[in-house]
Amino acid sequence: MINKQIPDIVVGRLPLYLRALQRMHNQGREVTSSQELGERLGISAAQIRKDLSQFGEFGKQGTGYQIGFLMDQLRQILNLTDVWEIAVVGTGDIGSAVARYQGFSNRGFVVKMIFDNHADVIGKKVGNFIIQDSANLVPYIRQAAIKVAMITVPANQAQEVADQLVEAGVKAILNYAPTSINVPPGVRVQYIDPVIHLQRMTYYLD
Amino acid sequence: MINKQIPDIVVGRLPLYLRALQRMHNQGREVTSSQELGERLGISAAQIRKDLSQFGEFGKQGTGYQIGFLMDQLRQILNLTDVWEIAVVGTGDIGSAVARYQGFSNRGFVVKMIFDNHADVIGKKVGNFIIQDSANLVPYIRQAAIKVAMITVPANQAQEVADQLVEAGVKAILNYAPTSINVPPGVRVQYIDPVIHLQRMTYYLD
Image (cartoon, rainbow over all chains, first blue to last red):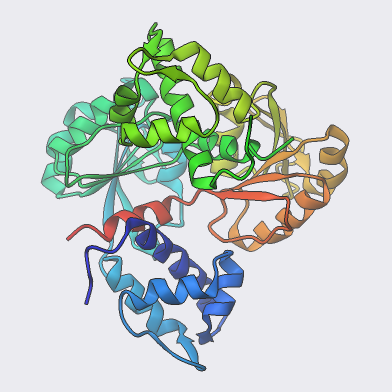
C-alpha cells in the first residue's frame, strides 16, 4: 500500500495531520472532515484529501474521517507503531531542554542517551540521564542500535558529530546546530534553526 | 527590485544562502560559486542561480559571487539591515534557552522582553531578563512596537497567546508550541516542533 515514491513534501504534511487528529482525539472527538482539518492547519481541504488518497481510502464522501482509525493508519505509514530511541549529542541549553522534554513519548520517540565532550559535565545528570562522554558515542549508539539522533552542539562541531553518528549506524538526524551538514545517501537530515524561520518572515515585514 | 510575488518556498531558501555565506565569510573567504553553495546546502547550483536571479544580478558567469556583496544584498532583501526586537512568551526550558541564546544578535534579531503567567516565576531572571507578567503582554509589546514574537507556552495556551500578540501588533510569530494556531491575514506564523521533523524522517526508516 505504501508507495515510497511519494513526494517528500507530501510526507512532510502527514505529521501535521496526525498532530491535529491527536488533538481532536484528546478533546473526545471521533469524526472529522478534510474541511475541518484544513481550517485548523491552514491547508486546503482538497490538498488534504489528495495527500491522504495517495496512501489509501481513509474516509467516505459525506461521512468524513474516523479520527482513531486515521491516526492508526498515519502511525503505520510514518513507522510510528514502535517507539524510536533517540541519542542527543550536546548538553547546552537546547540539548538539556530536549532531554527533559515531555512531549516525545506519546508521539513515537524517547530520548535514550545523551553525550557531551566537556569534562566538566560528563557524568553529571540532565533530566533523568547521566551525560556520557562523546568519545564513546560510536560504540554506545551502535551497541544500542539507535537509528535517530539530535545534534545540539555548536556549528563548528556539527559535521564531525554527524560523521560519527553515521559511523554508528544512525539513519535520521535532527540538527539544531545552525549549519548545513553533509551525510551519505540513505541518511536523512532535518534542521531546526529559529533564525532561518525568523528571516523567512521578516522578508514580508516593512 | 524586490518582487513581493516571489514564491514563499524561494524566500525560504534565502536565509540558508545567507547562513552559508556568513560561514564562508567567517572563514576568510571572499568569492564563492553556485556550485560550492549547492554542495554545502544540498541544493542544485541551477536552483540557487534561479532563486537569486529573481532578485537581481549578483554574480558574473565564470567569476562567481562576491561573498560580502551577496550577503549585503540578501540582508536587504530579507529586511535584516536593522535589528528586529523579539518578545518571548513562556519561560519553560525552551523559552529559557531562547532567552539565553547567543546566536540571534549577529543575524538580525535580539530578544527584548520575556513573559510568563506563573506567579512563581514573574519577577525572576532568565538570562539577562526579568520575567514579565503575561497580563501586561499587550500594552508592553505595543508600547515597544515589537513586531516579532516567539511562543513557547504549552499547546493548550498557544492560541490565546497568539491572539494577544496579534492584538499587540505583532506581525511575525515563531510558534514552538506543538499545535497549529490561527492568525489574521497580514500576520505570519512559522513553526518549530521537533517531533514533526522526526516523523517526517521515520517514514523512510525500516
